[in-house]
Length: 300
Length: 171
Image 1 (spheres, one colour):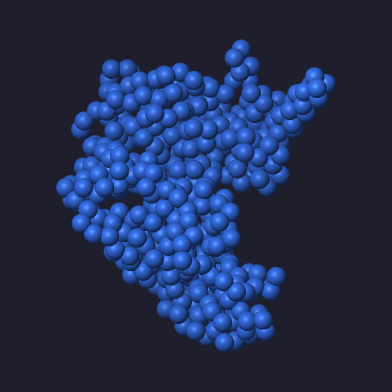
Image 2 (cartoon, helix red, strand yellow):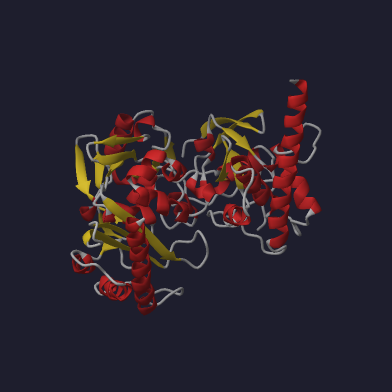
């Protein structure tokens, strides 16, 4: 590509926008209320900026919430771990409290992009971006996380099950900001597993599974949560497979069957990397492996 | 759109500029600071050629706007060498271990590897592969690069051991 000489004007990839850097969350919410659909929230920018560069999307205003201290922090509060939406992936992946309380987050973080991406990308940004193949949205759905969402006029708590509407679309309004995510803390004999298939390390997965199980001392499954990524227009749960596993002491062959059951109702996309049928078959295997991993962890 | 004044420290020097908000940090470094060591390959976060350090952490400079770096500290590949232009351990290992051929991807690899070794001075081969997985090379192949990072880790360890033993003898 030819670069122009000095004075010729310099090429830029995204279309023009006004940059707003409010100093408080309140100021950011006021701006969003005022600007309406012309504005987009910018957090870590690791998904939004490529989309702007490719001109898949364009906005009149970007409201940068990345520097806001109010969106930082990780704390344990009545049975859940509350993580500020602006917390970068690197911190989530390394935090000792996260590892002890919500180990699934610690397990999935290394699978997100590359370390350079995780240095900028935020947990709230990933969840609000709602890519159906992304890890944090799937974990939020699997653990029945609660999402604290604020606008200039109100604050509400949205269950993850009511948050993801479609690809890159959530139930948040344009003037709302995801402030924090509350992850329930599982106790007892718990285990967690994650398995993904990606063409290259760090790519979005073609398909993957994220699971949590809790067992009795006998090995009988008391609680089970199965999530699939890359298998539909949003991350999805597999309620029939979860119900089939609860109350059983599954053999390895049973897990194969549970895997098949888990993908039965999915509507996997087809693209040049994988057909729907391929995703379904691999997705079932991902569920089997993630469950095996989770069950092994309960026994250790 | 409204241009914005930005000010940041780049390789220890204060830099000021007035930029369109849509100008990436990479373009600011190359065009406004004339630091063309930071290369642009894909410009959407895949290839890693534009990797720089922001406040000591490796980031993609094509996935940040210059306005977002306002008030921060940036280190580019030009800022890695010592005061007498003495190559840092990673740079010199890339030379001795043939970690580059055409050199286009090299600035990104060198910055990523430098960041990797700062955080993990004694990486396994798997750690190195993982640490470099966000950088693409289309000609040299990765074996020489892997060797270079391994060699850099060893030379940094030897150096720190040497300076430790100096410390002991002073005590």
